[in-house]
Image 1: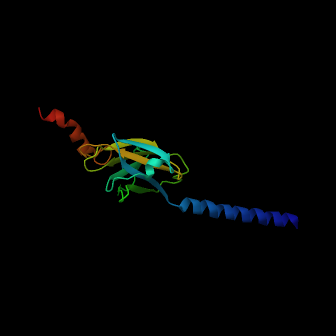
Image 2: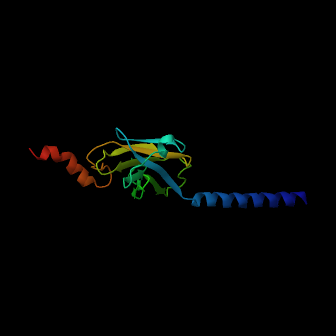
Image 3: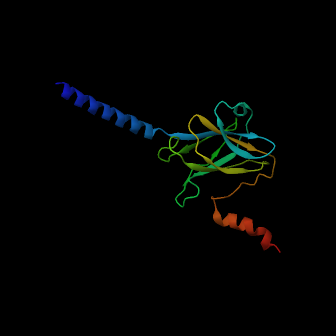
Length: 161
């Protein structure tokens, strides 16, 4: 009788584990952060209690990104604009996002601000992305969005001779 009870217990534990893993996999991960004003432009990962996240943000800044940017089958994240407080959340659908290690290339731009871009490790849910934009012309950095336009922009100084 004890052998049967042990078998049932193991089956129940396996079923519970399967439900937990499935529910955890269905939970949507969001890359959260804030765009703020500064002297120069940068992107960094900080703790969610970082005091700079409590300061004023830049409303309407454009934030976009790509998961595994160096791979041919990289995944483009939905582009988002920051809210009135400068905060953003990019949904990430990659399997295990927030648990497994992924690289993400981020770029941010805003009117009359110098764009920022960098590749970071996808942070866990207890961390935030702090994007600082310095004063500038507001031209977005175009690394992966439109390769033809990027090529033409890079070649422009040489074509006008």
